Amino acid sequence: MNANNTISDNTMDSLERLRMENVLLIEENKKLSETVDWMHDTIWRLVRSTQRPKN
Image (cartoon, rainbow, N blue to C red; front, top):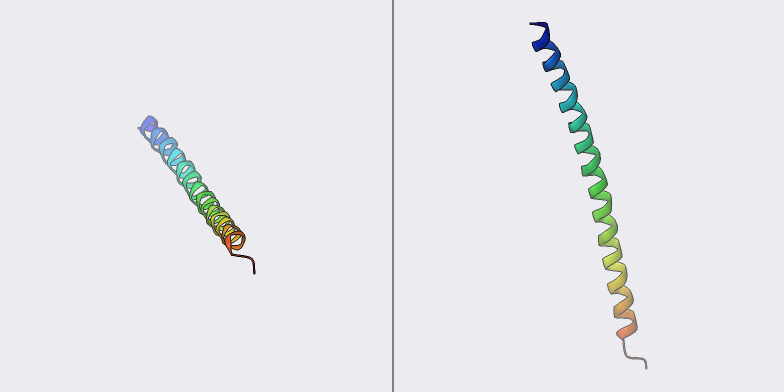
C-alpha cells in the first residue's frame, strides 16, 4: 500500500510540474506571438511609407 501512495505522490508531483511548465510555455508563446504581430505591423507600415509616391 505504501508503494502505491508513493507512486501516486510522484505522479501527482510530476503532473503539477508539467502543468506549471505548460502555463509558462503558454505565457511565453503569447508574448512571442504579440512580438511577431508588432514586427509584422511595423514592417508593413515602413513598406507602405516607402512606396508612397513623392510629390
